[in-house]
View 1 (cartoon, one colour):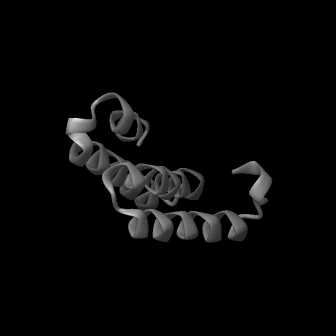
View 2: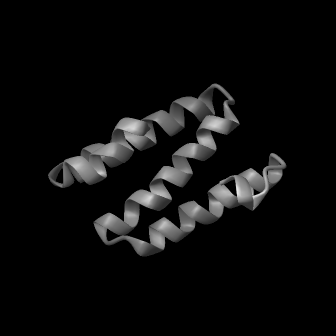
Amino acid sequence: MVLGSTLRKTEPAQISVGEAHIWQGSSMAEERALRAFSVQGYLFLGEFYPDSGRKDAALENLKKAEAMYREMGVGPQSY
């Protein structure tokens, strides 16, 4: 997920590769019930999508991350 997030700034031409890395990492975390890592994937996507012109997708993922953080008892000041 970190590699994908990094690609958005370092290699803008590979934006689809970066997105795939984030999704792959997030899926792996969800399969293993690693919520703390899974939520990070949604946060990364929320930060990633505006750079690719997909503001609606960014907002959707940020809202999902926020809801997951709240379910885990993490306050907004922490994320």
